[in-house]
Length: 165
Image (tube, rainbow, N blue to C red; front, side, top):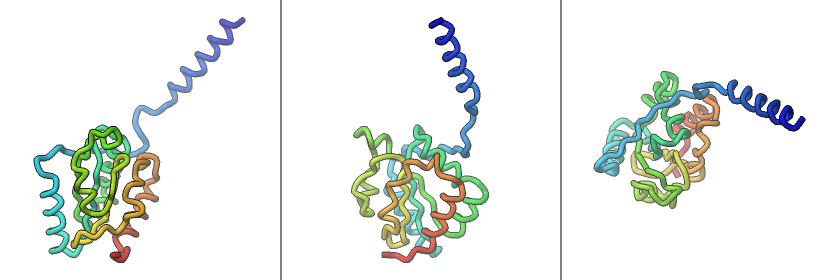
């Protein structure tokens, strides 16, 4: 009897696993490259933003992180690409694994007033002068893979128009 119950439970568990989709419900991209000087890439984005009147969308993440690749995937879609092309200069910075003490480029976040990067990704919206627009929400993007396309788009559109502090 116990074997039948155990076998039935195992069959139910396997059936549940079989219904999990092979692909995530969000697009993915892996643009986080380990570069020689990420700070100079950020400086270049700030200079381009000053010339264009845009803001800098500084995405601090890692290719190993599903939330980072989900956010990057959304940003690569035509809808988001149109928004970012019109309103932002986007720069991706690889931060390694900051939550385990193996982070890199964390001084970039500190430069703009974000004391820590407790997880990935962090999303900083900067004026061309380097003022952080979204201090309260910059480190809250660790759940980007579970956010809806609409919620992400609405927040990025609103941050593009948020007055500088």
